[in-house]
Image (cartoon, rainbow, N blue to C red; front, top):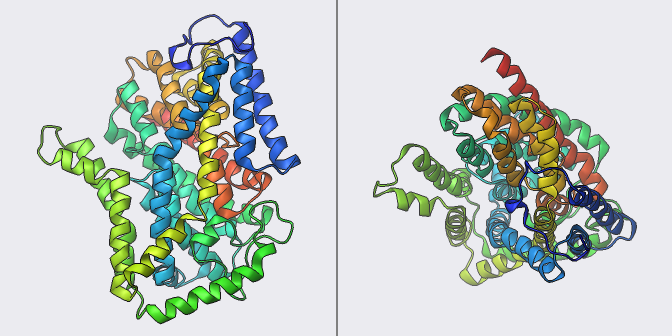
Length: 501
């Protein structure tokens, strides 16, 4: 097959067809493409957006996607990510900016800091897990960022000591617990039971959060000893006078240190403006109500999906108000009152704050979108199909096969949801006749595999990297290792439970 000859999309390919030369080629191309991206970013210091775009176009052409279709595939991937995640990031940044500038984040952090500071990572993991029950990872992250970064600045802690527990709490829920899209999709394909999967998922989630969160956070903080940095620092109001701005000069992430003086002057001016217009600080109760309002709305939607008939008159209403876009928009509007007019800010000042909240995340959104484009080119080129063929040939049990397939497709495509759906479809014939408990364990094993080693083809990787101002290498040593721990612990727990249930 010629280099620019069109090939079928992975969704149309037969995973049971014999192995062929194209399967070998797309796997080699995927590895080379990932290597090109890493080399461009780490070696040549090229911007991640450009590196991901170059890598995606190379992989598409070398995989056999038609020259006229490769850019369309990339654009579809960018659009699918930014069309949803981009909106959520923007709305979440608005809430985060108002939360920080109003003093609401200070209220939350003051409450968290009461008692022994040694338990703060555990509190952060607990809050993230609670918020993560109904929320996608990206939504929970943008809501938690201001609180995490302010806690880092106030305590003088290393960033990863508090960031890793929060990330672990969000990620574990995303992989294991309905109503997240991955677990729900696998339950649908395998005809599982939502309630049983939810109950067993919580048993798997607890040790995964504990080990990959607060415990690994201590190790990660030693491996990558940075302070508050990156886009998260800007969203949370910038570094204060006398506080650490994060990375030292020459740090390869967001180069905060080289602009420290300018940031400090701008922050002092901003604080003076706030003091002249803000007459009081929002109460802790109203702060929690505002931040958790989208959580409650999305929980209502999740409850309606599980327990309510679609013929019920309330069902479409709960579906609408619980949609993440509406839920976060509601939170922004509520924050404009609780974090704005109620404490003395005028509408013009609120508009300026909302506008300024979008500037730090514009680069993040482009990088996340490019990650989605790279993922889509891998999927359309047939990399996922080739990996599925390898897994089927291994002839393993449904539980272990589901985990391995999800791991391989996650590594190749970067998408946890694609990995989950594909793996569930492959093991579905093996799950026929199994009881509801064992099917739930297969779902959880697939969910665990879908989280394995997030790297440069995952939009979440770039989101974490840019928010916390890390280099690619530092993100791998912290975020990627954390994801791998969650995946392995999840598999171990499902195997353990399968021996007793």
